[in-house]
Length: 198
Image 1 (cartoon, rainbow, N blue to C red):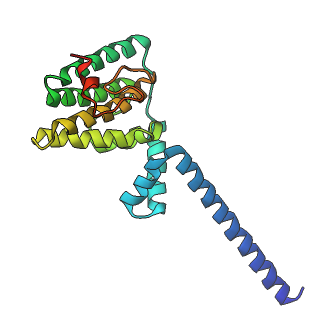
Image 2: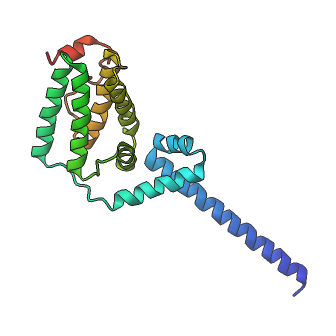
């Protein structure tokens, strides 16, 4: 066989290998985007490039696979739902305390579900695997709660924190119907929503 034929074969094989690699990367990106949603973009922005973000998201998924996550039994869902009602009712008289208690309640639900709860960043990373649609709510609520501890959050900020906590809380309870501070079609800025619990 002529040497040029070997060169052509080698070039074709390299091109096919490159195409296969490109296709596999495209599929990997598509799968991670579908699984993590907006958390994918958040990770790319935070880590500075797509490759590092993909590696981080895959590490998270592998970590969560080894956790012993479990659904809540009905009695725990009821107990936590009742606790949420108390937090919501407290908001009218003590928004700061209600926000603090909402943070504690979400952390307790996570613990009972099987998530490690020692570090916020790790909690958010773990939550992003199974609950990617609400992890940004968790980050926003947590940031407001920390500002509240420093005396830097307004009542409106705290109201928004509770709305954010509620989104995660509902997802963790896996009911989708926890009575919360804002019902479908209601405005988070409407004071009547918050006085229902009074």
